[in-house]
Image 1 (spheres, one colour):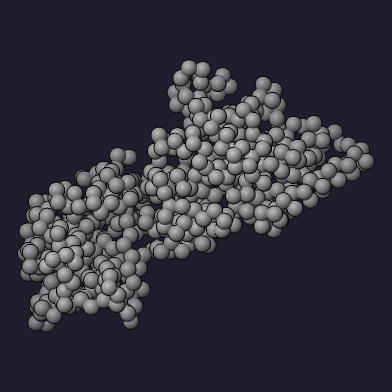
Image 2 (image 1 turned 120 degrees about the vertical axis):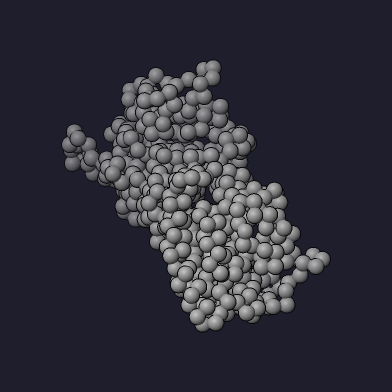
Amino acid sequence: MLTDSSSPSRPRRSRLRTIATAAAATFAIAVGAIGATPAQAWDPGHGSGGERQLAPRTSFVMAPDGSSGATQGGEGIPNIDSVKKTIATYYGDPGTGIADKTHSPYITEITGILSREKAQLKAMYDRAVHRGQKPAIVFDADDTTLWTYDMEVADMHFTFDPAEQDVWVQDQRFPATPGMVSFVDQAAAMGFTVFGLTGRNDDQKAATLGNLAKVGYTAFTNDRFFTKWTGAGASQQPSYIHCATAKCTTVEYKALTRKHIQDLGYTITLNVGDQWSDLQGGYAQRALKLPNPTYYLPSPDLPGVHEPQLAPRTHFRMAADGSSGATQGGEGIPNIDSVKKTIATYYGDPGTGIADKTSSPYIRELRSIVARTLPALAATCAVEKRLHKNPAVVLDTDDTTLWTYDMEVADMHFTFNPAEQDVWVQEERFPATPGMTTLANLAQRSGCTIIGLTGRNDDQKAATLGNLAKVGYTGFTAANFYTKWTGVGASQQPAYIHCAAAKCTTIEYKSQTRAHIESAAGGGYDIVANLGDQYSDLIGGSADRSIKLPNPTYYLP
């Protein structure tokens, strides 16, 4: 706040205006130094004026190729943890990485799709025979006839490992995709010739056919099941496939194999797959897309072929808690591989898991937030200091003052590992969050006490303070840096925190700590601004302003 309730005299008001103007000018110079244009608005767009604004976005526009990371901003990118929870809900996964095999929104959806398709099989077959054709149906393998969820999630945690995949293939571990055995059996019994066409390689062909038979398929045969060449020994690129470069695309391989099937005298009346690249390229009368948000295998279409109907969704609605997995359907869930690519684009990550430290959409957005925040924050700190109101700024640590992207992505691949995180913490590896040393240090110089409030624990406090000092922060002290208790020895829950259950929530811990900071026992500060990258850093009051920093790399509700 910029006014004094005691109604100061006109000369005093003039002095306060001078202080505020000088502080704002100082911050404007600093803003110029970080390469942004200052604005007069205090609020950067998230969280001023009531807690109704402290909630994640629920609508998103996302291109499948990741390019939206250059345009959407951090809050406009589906948060990867929320995507994971949404996918888990969809597959009936209770959090173990294992899909429910009897009942889930996924099973309900795919059963409905196949039921509708079954009703059309007879008419498709009769039309083909009437025209003198030999009707055939082509099926992909992974997540079309065989179901890979448990491998992708419980084993690989959404990070594909070809060596581990080969173990699953050779061990024939995959269950059948729900409802598909019945669908293939019905088509075969009706008279359709059944073909398999998969991106699995020739070395995996025998095991794949064994797995298909093991789970109940009877229509797939060795001569009508196409796997991809390895380039070793007799496993070479077939003469009927001609590709634009030495490495064939998925669409080139699959479309030209379908053309080969047609050249053998068959008419492909239906082509079934879970990836758009299973279906693009033509050489089939109809394409049936099965839902699969667990991975995305893109491929350019054949030259001159334009199939706009065979393209992923770009508009999504997704609740942060994962509940949308019960309502949206597989195509309505942001595909996790597209989300990863979008996040990488946003952070200037070329695919290594390492963020660009000099220029990226993320850095530009952070600088813009700092630029919009600094002038008014400077003035508030200066005026409240002059009025002896003991102003303070509270800052979270991870991805508010210290930047964890390289750990989260290059090291952990978006699967949090607390033991590995502690290694990074104790070794003080984290760079500063872009622009935040400027904000914190100049807020301190303008009269605010800088207070840290983090979910890191007491055993990590010294290393965290060391890391902050190492990257240029000057205002944090042990006395004004709050870490969470471990429950061991002297590190116990403070008396000022009371929680509904034995394990406190983030909001209980952080909001009650802020209330303590504003109390006489905690120093009697007035928290003029509370900054965090998670909504749970901000919810619960005890701050004049809440400033949300973007972070789609994890979600802590």
